[in-house]
Image (cartoon, rainbow, N blue to C red; front, side):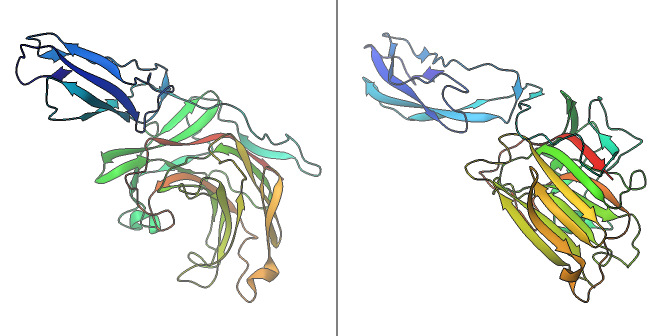
Amino acid sequence: MLTLDHASSKPVTVNYSTVDGTAKAGADYTAVNGQLLTFQANETEKRIQITVVADDIREADETFMVRISNPVNVNLLKETCVVTLKNDDTKIGFANTGYDAPTSYPGYTLAWSDEFNGTSLSATDWSYESGDGCPGLCGWGNNELEYYTAPPNNLIFQDGKMIIEARAEAFGGKSYTSARIKTQGKRTFKYGRIDIRAILPTTKSLWPALWLLPQSNVYGNWPTSGEIDMMEEVGSEPAKVLGTAHYGPGPGSTFISRNYSLSGATFNDQFHVFSLEWQQDQIKWYVDNNLYSTVSKADVGSNTWPFNEQFFLIVNLAVGGNLPGAPDASSLFPQWLILDYIRVYQ
């Protein structure tokens, strides 16, 4: 609504135009450029109408600006206003495109999988972690900023996919919520090939991870008994993922980490498969079956090689923390880590 502070005896005219913000013309609304708006004599209010592009896809609230110009018979007290498009849709938008792993490998048999075709998390295979890690491990040991909630709050099942949603919302004394699940005590693994097909989020401060910890700390507390990071992504670098082996005497980690980058694309564009090929005294990391890192027992030198033991899987989407840093004005929420399947071959 455009309002004059008092009536005029003469016609008043202005032009108005839209300016993109996080909302984009064409995708979110219909652009207007230099549209004439006329107040007849003694009129004081006029409605500006902008057509919104409707869909059923869940996304963050978005904004654009309306700019007023070329006033005739009036002085402008304010030349711009910000319009917020509030999103109340529930469907998360993605396409089932991208790399898909083969369903068999020579010399391997499928030992376990979760295809996420149900409507909730399998209690046989998974448990969830909630809270902020306090009091034992506040910030989950990484100065993370989220509060992990119990399903189904931030854990969604849609179209045969499991989706972890990170939101900017106050909960449990934190400003963000997300989810973290694990197979500890239910499904443990030693050696084999693990394939996880996923779409990763893309915004500053997001930290999705697919990783493994030891079922028993055979060699002592972290990091001496090991940690295997199948995939980590820093949200502000959406074309790059990391694969890391943590070990060493502690208290801090000794680690070997390498990365894989896409050319002209991001891991948010479509599905990719992150794989681990794990055998006695050696681990290999793959993206879309492209080998990019190999770590062997000889690489850790005199340190204990802790990776010939039973490990369990963890899937989580952290907000903030030591690796990605805190959100800023450029960070967009909600964000999603979308998993199609996890398959373990042995």
